[in-house]
Length: 488
Ligand code: ADP
Image (cartoon, rainbow, N blue to C red; front, side, top):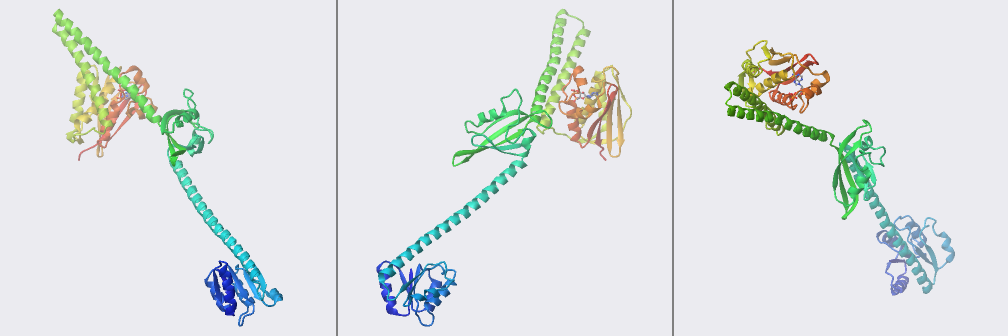
């Protein structure tokens, strides 16, 4: 809009008419003061300012306008009778365009100037608008970038905090980010860790994996740089999509070495167990065949009795093996339950000794002392522990056949100690004998067994708030003990 400032209404009228005729929106003010008020309120593209006005002349008005930040850039065309006054134009009015038209006004020249200034104003306004938009755009992008950086650094710290090795790769599968654990296995952040020579190189397996764009996983053995040993890892990868297009891959490598070892132990265990079960079965089969022949030949009762006893011994062995196997599976599924009641500890131990003594007449089991304490627990399960200790004492003591059982009362606990003078256990292996499937090499070469008996004992005693232990010297013998709280 153009603002015409003149104290003479007829001048305003003629100018207004001219400008409106040429399509310019127009406003007017009859004095400098009114002009200033309007300039503050409205936005003008151009001011046509009469110089000779009473009270406040045109130059004073221009001077005042130059003080308003909002208006100082509006171009001004001065209308004056005397052209030399131009030099009085205030210095402060610097940036806006200023021009000068002498009176009487040549309408064509004025129109030309108005058009030029108006065009300039519009271009400037467009430029300004554009600048504002650009500024907003830059601001928006900066914020988006900051937010993105934030998300990325959050994502990276999440990957860092994982217990696994974690990494991201580009859509084509090239490594992008790796967490710290990566360097325990890889030489650099740019290379995959070296894997076992029997496998295809890991980088190759990775590229094959991402080929069809689906999540995938595979097991691999990679070399730990600190220990120089290969460990089993499970690599698991997932594509990340943006607008249905894969933009990157996120993957983890989870250490499954222990699980693998367990699986191996379990496989070995199954093979030993099958063998252990097969041996007594073969014997039983043989004794039954012998019995059949004896009956057929009408042989003596004594011979029959002997073979029946032997077959029974093997059946008992089988029974114990199967019971142990069932116990293991009960422990693993958390279903080993106890029928607890108060019982006499001494009687329970005597009963166990009787059972073992009867079937092992060549051994001398000596009970060193007695007690009168009572224990609250599952009597048959605790007797199972004593039976197991005694059976082991006999099994691992093939030469010296003296075994002793001692009961020690100490404070609120009762300890049962079974001592043999057998093969003993090397110091470094003593801690492991209560672990599942563990068998000391010395024992496993010469004696049959599954390595689960002591593990079951430890579970039972643990379920009664007690603890198990062993004292032993290789070649001299062992004392296996367990301790339980006394019922007061
Ligand atoms: P198993 O006797 O079937 O091997 P156990 O769990 O009963 O399984 O025993 C685990 C291991 O502890 C045995 O293999 C053996 O090495 C050792 N061990 C147990 N009892 C004795 C003992 N009295 N003397 C020497 N070694 C023993």
